[in-house]
Length: 398
Ligand SMILES: *Cc1c(COP(=O)(O)O)cnc(C)c1O
Image (tube, rainbow, N blue to C red; front, side, top):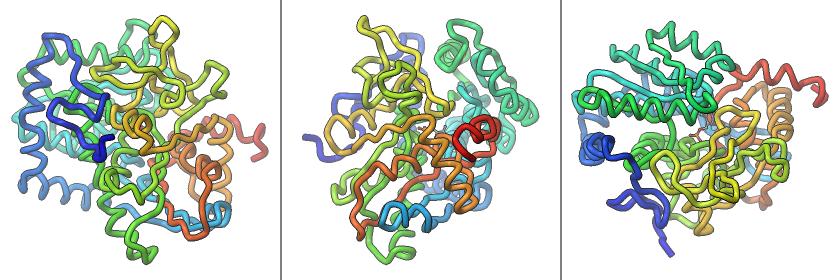
């Protein structure tokens, strides 16, 4: 069995990964593949990237001992506070890195896709900072549902283009962004938002988010007096905050890994986004991984109350971690996540993003020993979800 979980030259983590793209896109993907490691590992890139993470994003993010969760779980639970980053989530770590990469490659303009608009806002933010023109593709239905993020992107100077094909959601936004990338290849950089897509994107995004686990390695001896955590826990939509949380610990089997995924209204209801639990092998958005599909192999639309976890696939790294037994999966329903969010807010004054609330809820489904030292990544803050929280509060007793 594969003991390390880093990508090979062809972009595979074991059996999952690769780069499945139509012929007109091969040149663009290959150009990126050929240069990304050399650029992001260079001293010039690292100096600029780290200075921005410190002074613009506000890193390092704190590793905070949660009294109420520690009491509930009977061991030490630390929260990695990505909610305190500029723009309110981990996504900015990746967009800062990719815009620097685009600059080093001599690109002049950025395109991106967005589902709920969180990645779109993080992309429009760094484009404002670097003075890059920016076009964001977003499903027309999503634009209506996430009106505030559309306005934020426009205020930042981005052009938001509605994707009007298919279901008019993320899937279609990805397709239209890829078509646009084919049409204007030379000067255009496609800034992808999660650890998905054709190689090298899953590896690129994982390495840019790996700052999370790098900081955990430095912080845990200081705050917990131990060399390393016993458990890492993170939620997975496409997989970027989880990949960043696990990255430097992937080969260390002393550190247990648990992935929280959204089961929506329940695993058996058909309204679920539990890709790692229910998904089957297939190719989606340029790589081989697990995805929600029916008996005929056609993609099934996912469902979760959390827009960030409402994705039909999952990154190839995460499929490999689960398939090889390196990671466990815990599923969390909409109501379990909502309740965990209300509770953390009441007890500690931290309102998590509804995505991150899945991570918090998963903690009470994991068996811990009293000596365990757990790091759970709080991927974002809940301001964006306030309407959802208000809508369900009374029903759930808050
Ligand atoms: C987008 C988002 C996620 C899901 O994306 P990943 O790539 O799986 O990390 C999780 N939490 C928050 C706060 C998000 O904005």
